[in-house]
Length: 346
Image (cartoon, rainbow, N blue to C red; front, side):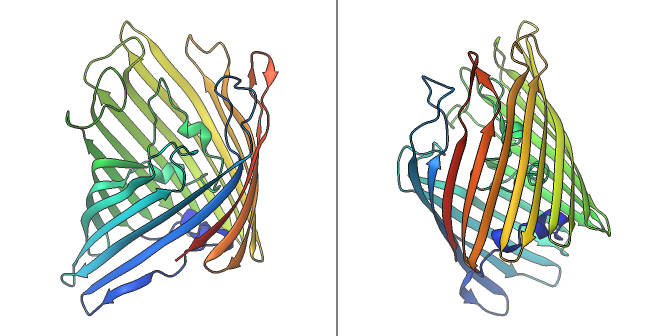
């Protein structure tokens, strides 16, 4: 798939991809090994018992390692695959994952450098929308990511997912379908997810402007008063010019539960980045507002995020971010959050 203005941004100083280590290379087959190590320290979340107060300062170490291959089957067809793990130094960390987790595990093919298909633990089609404003390491992208009754929209990676992408001209079209089964652990209680699908389209102009639209539907096997089928969609635009990037998304989420219970919200996000030598300066704003009968607090997300990163060497960067949460809990303003980190890629 061709690089968009958004993809171009993430290859700048603070987001530069290091060259992968080549494990094997021949006329038809290439196998790469790649990964990264990170350590982050700061105040990442709020106290469950006192939701207006931040937690104590702490650290979190994590690493990723994975391999991917490309087998040139013919002039028209390439076979592809990827396997990547996430490892955390602490069992109880900000990502709430186990100490070892599979990020990607898929097999697929590319035909004529236009059509791609993969199945396994893949990236969802709606990631094209999330990528417009997802420029931070620690914070940001929290409005589109906010759950409704425990159900997360626009989930970037899903198991048992078939993903199809078609690149033609200035268009990048994608679709994904998640096959759910009873053998898997329930993601929400008490009902099981039945299926999930997503669609997205991106159009890139000759002036490095991206227009993105995405739609997602999650269906469940039965409903309750607080669980039902969920629809999420959004529109986004990103523009990149001479080291400057600005992107924004606007979208809606709606859950239709039993007994005519409806839960819905409107969200939008803005992100700005500017490359200055080996540094990248970033700022963002995330907002979500409830539009249902339970929206006694109009705002569910209302925050500013500021960040800076510096590329020490092509493989390593340091970064710092600051989050100003404008929500109030029981009449109290929430504390600010902050953190710093170091990342090494290989």
